[in-house]
Length: 391
Image (cartoon, rainbow, N blue to C red; front, side, top):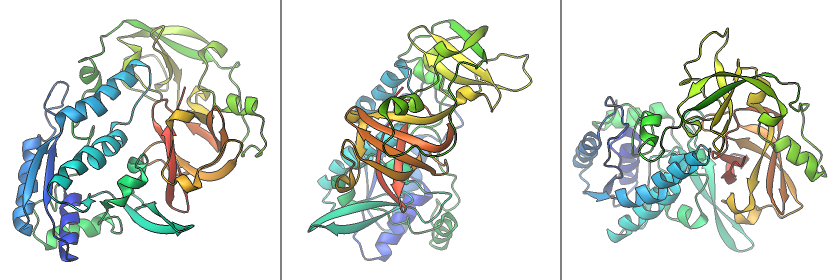
């Protein structure tokens, strides 16, 4: 129980279904460096969780997983930013903490299942006599959170329950209101999972030192490749797949120094704030970073071709199949719908499995494909697999 309305109603629904319910609140962060003071503190979250537990007449316990969270989520975040990649801590938190360390704590209390307030669903399917768990999108299209769970394993799904996945958000708030829960009208949390809303450069400067460097604006894009709409054929040559999946190449374009920055590792593809460079009709967007040379490459306007890519590549060791029985083998292809960030509309794509890794080539050009983020692929509303975007 996080102190939010979704986990509160998850407890309410399970109790109404006849489950023996126990609340478990976890504290995952102590350091306030870089936190925006307007964000609610963990003490407030715990207070609301305890109020709900009292209203539902269920016990509640508190566990501190700060050390595990620092080692398995935050340290990974710092390492990825240092490499010039942009990680997704919420996905990592679910894989490493909520459905791992937290589950261990719940089992110490005798739990058979761990329920969360995620807007997604779980079903079972039997193939060749073996049970597989399907991770399905939530009913509410505006709140579907299956993307955040795209790194879960079959074992993790086996002990998970998602009581609000079949409800719309307004139904969840109505249930909370009717039950007199204190969280009924509480705002949803924002920011980094269990850290809160942060000033990212200040937060990252705990480990990553500022480094002055050049902002280079790319104005001549004649050297950049262009690709027509449509999916490549299943027998597409691997060299062509590489070309389609290549990130913006600053060696293939020419630019001019437009300003200075305090560290390329503080910027991410698609970012438009934080450069403080004027004199343009349209905003400047980050189209690439070079952390080795400490350069931030930018382009003017939403339509700058450096923001768009035809595909992406995932290394073999960073591919994860939620449904291992549906995994592609080297040489196989498959058509899926793919999401490269939360709330992004699902996009048609063809997946090409090679010995070196997985190529995802989209029907339409995709804006702001970001190294370090996760791509998740779906079929008929089910998350089949995911992986870390390379490049």
